[in-house]
Length: 137
Image 1 (cartoon, rainbow, N blue to C red):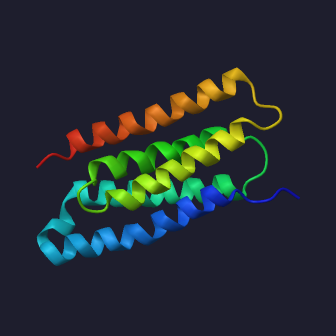
Image 2 (tube, rainbow, N blue to C red):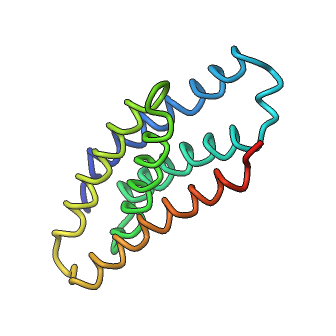
Image 3 (cartoon, rainbow, N blue to C red):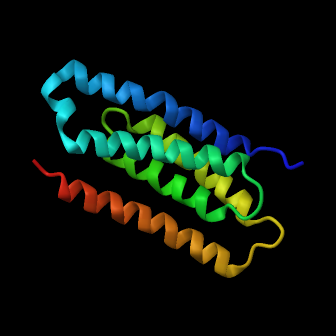
């Protein structure tokens, strides 16, 4: 039985703690803002990053792309929320990157697995940027 990846589990725990904090922070500023699509995009990115990190930490087999997607999502929301909720999310993203590096340095990983993981992380960030533009007020 394979041991769970501790950095990815910690990244998931941080994301799961920050998501309700983010929603309550927005609610405390204005209840009307809770209906904004951008708020829910960011909240879903935080939760999605946490779910991907937890899945990657506990799953068997090839999971480099999953952990890279978690890293991309958490770093993305960490950067856009840098002045409010971003620091813990950046920490989670760095932990997910460390976990991704450990996964990709394991047996059976090739250069193409590493390239695929990088492409997935960049794709997650690009989708997040597109989502921000699509949900502009």
